[in-house]
Amino acid sequence: MAVSLNIDPNNSVRSGGMVDGAGRHDLVGLDRGELLQRFEGLGLSVREARMRTRQLWNWIYVNGVTDFDKMTNISKAARTQFGEHFVLKRPETVSEQVSSDGTRKWLFRFVDPSNPQSLPVDVETVYIPEPGRGTLCLSSQVGCTLNCSFCHTGTQMLVRNLTAGEILGQILAARDKLGDFPGGNRPTDGMVPGREIRAITNIVMMGMGEPLYNFDNVKKALLIASDGDGISLSRRRITLSTSGVVPKIGPTGDEIGVMLAISLHAVRDDLRNELVPINKKWPLEVLLDACRNYPGLSNARRITFEYVMLKGVNDTDADARELVRLLANIPAKINLIPFNPWPGSPFQCSDWERIETFADIVNRAGYASPVRTPRGRDIFAACGQLKSESERSPKKHVRT
Ligand code: SAH
Ligand code: SF4
Image (tube, rainbow, N blue to C red):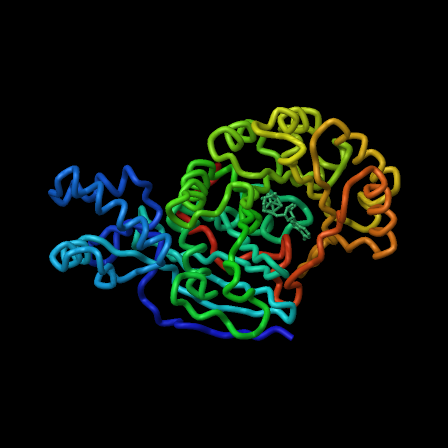
C-alpha cells in the first residue's frame, strides 16, 4: 500500500530561482567560473574569490549545507556578506509517497528563475532502492514536447525546461531526505541502504521530459553532479535516456561523457513512427548510426536499448529476432520494460509468458537479464507514469 505524506505545504522558500524575493542570488547550479564571478562581484580579490569558490563548492555539494552560518571555515564577516547576497535553495516539497517496494516519489515545486512572478511548476523525482545501490530518476523538463503514445508525460505539454539549478536541486533535496549528506538521518524503513554505501549511487535522466531538448542545462547539471570534488558521482553511474534526438547524441558523449540509453521500442520505422513520433525526423537507420559512433562506446561502456513491451503491438518473436539483428554490431544492453499503465492509456502490457519468450530470444543472443522489474507502480512512480498538474500559461508558447 502506498503511504502519502504532505510535507511543508506552506514553505515559502522555493528553489531553482536565480533571485529570491530579497534580491539574493541562488548559488546552486552555478559552475565554478560563475561562482568566482559572483564573489569577485562582491569586491573580493581573485585569490580570496578562488578560495571561497573551493570552500562553497564543498559546503554545497559535499556537505549539503544551506545555511551560510554553518560554514565554519569561513569568517563571520564573509558569512554575513554571503547571507546578504546569496541563498542556497531547495525546492518546496509538495508531497512524498513511499511505495510498498520502497520506491519513493517526490513532487517538487520550482519558480521560473527568469520570471519569479510566474506560476510555480511541479516536477516528479523518483528514488529506487535496490540491494547495494540506490538510483535517483531525475526530470529534465516540465512536460515534454514529444508525444510518445505509450507515455503519460507525453500527454502533458511542455511548460518549460528546468534550469541546471533545478535539476541539481532534485539531487540535493533527495540527498537531504535520504540522509545522504554527512550527519543526515537515513529513513528507518529498511528500504534505503545503510551507511555503508551512499543512498544515491546512480542517476538516471529518465523522469519527465526529453533531456536532449534541454541539452545545455542537463549538461551543466551532470558535469556538476559528476565533479570529483562535489557530489562526485562517476559518469559511468549516470545514464541519460533519449527518445532519439540524433544531433545531440554525439555531443552527449563528447561533452558530458555519461552512459546512454535509447528508447527504441520498435524495430520497424512504420511502427516506431507511431510509438515514438520523433522517428519521423530521425529514423532507425540514422539513429543506430549515431549510436555506433557514440563517443567512448566499448564493450565495457555499452548503450542500453529500452524496449517497452506492448501487448499485440511490438512483442512477437519476429520482433525479438529483428531487435537482436539490428543491434548486432553495437556494444549494447537490452532493457525490456513491462508497459506501465496510466489512466486512459491506449495500450496493455504484454502477458508475462510473452515477455519471457521474448526475453529468451534476447537472452540466447547473449544479452543478460533483460527485463526491468517495474518499481513503484502503486504510487505511479514507474517508467512513463510521471506527470504533474503544471500547465503552460496561456500567454506563453514554449516549444522547442
Ligand atoms: N524522454 C526520455 C527519458 C524519459 S522516459 C526518453 O524517452 O527516453 C524514460 C523511459 O520510460 C523511456 O524509455 C520511455 O520510453 C519509457 N516509458 C515511457 N512511458 C512508459 C510506460 N508507460 N511504460 C513503460 N515505459 C515507459
Ligand atoms: Fe517525452 Fe520520453 Fe515520454 Fe517520449 S517517452 S513523451 S520523449 S518523456
